Image (cartoon, rainbow, N blue to C red; front, side, top):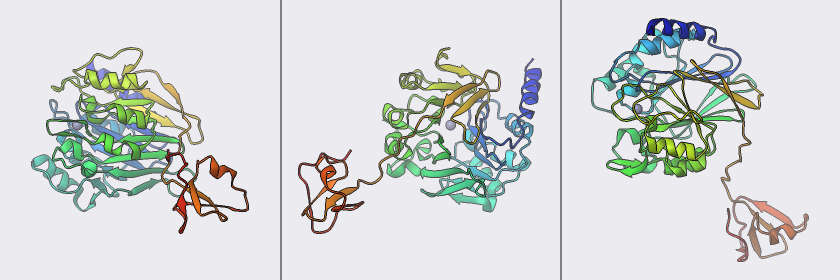
Length: 365
Ligand SMILES: [Zn+2]
């Protein structure tokens, strides 16, 4: 029964092909582990983690999935952190699909044979991710896919918890965005630290959220959800996990924030609620260039469309306004500043020299 189901789903997958002119993100069902592959419209590939399930210790599902996609090679690899459920299948995968570019990880070292096997498998492709680093896919085409590293190693928070050291990366394709943040935590509990709050503003609005830490109770805090406003959360979890993932508290926060979730497996925590949660095996997110929506399609389930919300640009710098005839300057949104005539009006991203701030200005938003 299982074999025929597997054969059937592999057959269905073969029809996707590697490059199909759309952005594809496959969140692959790898049991209690993590792995997702991004395929650009012109066929460049980025693998985010290649994890091994604790119980099955099996990488064949992942290798078979990539084979069925007709993936020829991995162009870039991102490793969130060094737990086996994120790197345990790297050697196996790269044995089948050679790595062309770099393997971006959090640097440093980690104890154990799994980490050693990872380091040996990537060899000189290994590179420490740097905040602000960008990998651009389809760089020679009109609509590139950009992946930017936003944080790693705790984002300045002092922690030794391996989960909290996860690399945080954001993918952008036209108005579509998705976040990958490994097993990041969102609360201080035991040796877990709240990293989500630290990075939420920087991540900003996203469409698809790879739910941190398999929806552990420590992940996905309210501030994170408020700032990132995801429409869709993908939960990578395994039926045999001993951690009660996905956790009820994590799921409730997602539901409260209006996030629809897709699970690779049922897991061993909270039960899915039919109006909110879909358990569907591997989950494919697809977007056609120029489209005003994207699609989420579980391997065993129907496709759902999601509108691309208008993304409010994050204010990065407060700008200033002043009149050449006055000794005071204003924040750009100050009502008084609006009455300055066109001819006298000057603006800048830093305060003008020799002038003082108008005390009646509202504080910057
Ligand atoms: Zn994990």
